[in-house]
Length: 236
Ligand SMILES: [Zn+2]
Image (cartoon, rainbow, N blue to C red; front, side, top):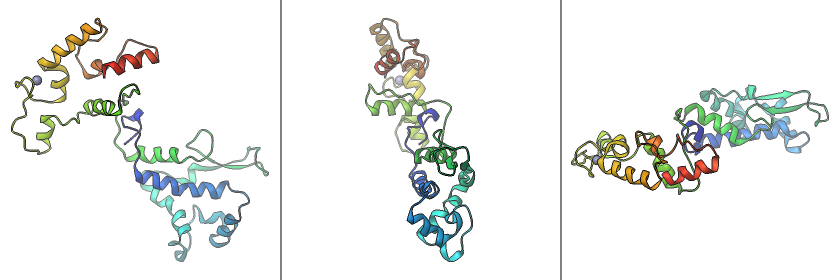
């Protein structure tokens, strides 16, 4: 799943993790200036250790051969390692005044997380609605709201749409309308009564329950981060 800013839960894909960890060997090779292992690789695979160039067929199935080939695995994600790694010549920390840098991290150093995010961004589902998350309530409640906002709760309407055999799609609380996210959180008579009690409890600080975002306090009037989080956590 994508980052919370893009509507996900910050759980990256295993494929992205694997590719990013392999790519880290590119960084180790480029960043190392005097390691013996690097000299051995250079002797076997040629200048730049065969990174970013086509290595001879017989060497492609070796462990290092597969590491050099990770750039091909990244092509479907529109990621070009030969562009992302760049040589910075005004770097003073190196004996010859230059250093390899990585474009996706502000520090200039390669990070697995930066590449993971870039890979995930290119193929994982994302939305323009950032995930609402607060640490003062259990994770399962945050996840429940995340699913509700995406319309992915196991409501009777959703279950029927997925082909699950259920006797009725009507709301079990009022037995009058189809049970979907809108009905549960906005229109059901039971929910509205509950909302009225909540507003009473909160002394009208809660907005009228005209949308799920209002109900969970996304549009909270509280501007201070902590105040907003407490308010928001109680809503959840
Ligand atoms: Zn109902």
